[in-house]
Amino acid sequence: MSLTVYNTLTRTKEPFQPLNPPYVGMYVCGPTVYGHSHLGHAKSYVSFDVIVRHLRFLGYKVLYVQNITDVGHLTDDADEGEDKVLKQSRLDRVHPMQVAETYTRSYFEDMDALNVLRSDISPRATGHITEQIRIARQLLDAGLAYVAGGSVYFDVSRFAAYGKLSRRNVDELDAGARVEVKSEKRHPADFALWKKAGPDHIMRWESPWGEGFPGWHLECSAMSMKYLGEQFDIHGGGLENQFPHHECEIAQSEGATGKPFVRYWLHNNMVTVDGRKMGKSLGNFLTLKDAFQRWQPEAIRFFVLQSHYRSTLDFSDDAVEGAARGLEKLTNTVRNLRESLSHAPEIGPNPSIDVTRYRESFIQAMNDDFNTPQAIAALFDLARDVNQALAGPIPSRASLAAILGLFDELGGQVLGLGLGSTGAQRESDLTPQLVDLMVDVRKEIRAQKLWPLSDKVRDGLARIGIVLEDKKEGTSWKRA
Image 1 (cartoon, rainbow, N blue to C red):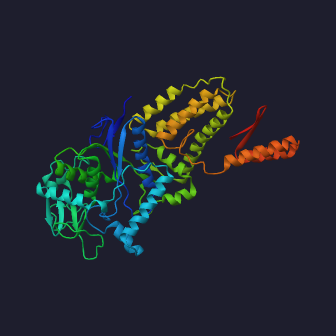
Image 2: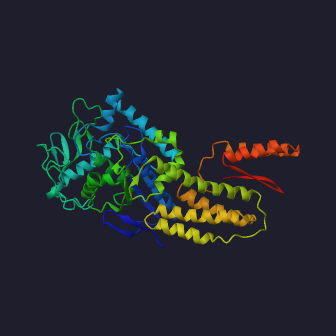
Image 3: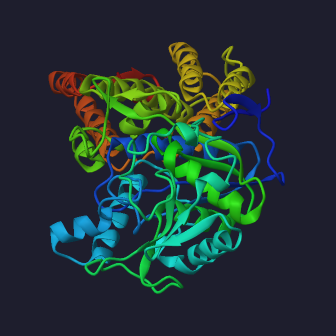
């Protein structure tokens, strides 16, 4: 089965056919850096991380661009209100760029903890002012924009395709529905390409229309086209950005170039709490830094991947703890597999585990619009058969190595869960070394025939989930 993706632009699943195979250009809207990342960010960026990983697994050469928004994103997302970074700087009484630097570093720390691969390019809006001014001038020259009160607005009435992504009809938009009607706008749906800076606005740049700052929508068009070209393959982002942000990106980009902007629009759904969207404005969000105090980052990642990227993810303590238990089951299987491999015979029984079938089942799930829940189900089926095989005579080294390699390839490389021999899961704790040490100490105790003390060590380890197995060739251990 070849890769199919759900394209929001067409509302259908389509075969994935990049513009210039095997090269794939992919842009994902990055964070606005005015606060610490929360679980909603984890949903989005873990989802797109797995999409990038799977594309590369299939052999595509992906150029992945994810921006940092450090200016221009206003509090109501639609040309009114205060700049989010500037507002936070006023609250903290520091320079806006200090706010942006602080939370940019915080964002990357959280993503690193979640084993989210860094994008190939992480452009910042403030570093691309020239490109944004250039596009605004192109749109003015094409008659698709106008200057009013020192600001530049895109005229949606001049772009017939406006609304094709979100299926919104401009004529039906209520004049007061999303933005305050201002005399300088010809239509309430017109959006800012460049905003005049007020006297107290610290973040400001020179432009042909006076000092100001770029519009939020224009930033992503400028940065994506600079690094991926006027046409590219995948644009991703949160479902809440479909309108107005992505709709406006299409209008200004295609208006400036006269070419189709993006082939495939992919949108991840949101995290909810009791059925309501998780968000800072609603006060029901949990920062990732707080979440990491309660659960391992790997458990958070696994929790996200248990839902399809286009499905909502309802957060609760029980749900995350359930995900942690599920991940521990897979991890235990892999640990036991690795331990068995360490003393497996060169010649031994070959378990009836069809590695090729499990690999194909996993790939088929991922090729169906990146269906991570089904892919994880394939790993659990594999783990069940492995546990049954390890309950008997130890299989041959070659067969165990092949299975471990499969966990590494699928669970590690594609899902980023660190399963397998070279996965990214951080075994930074000292548990394996300490258990090995206790096994060696117990060996000395048994040599001195101190049986009660030997049993005490064995039973104590069992209480914390470590099972010792005494065999002729020595003592081995596994997690319960």
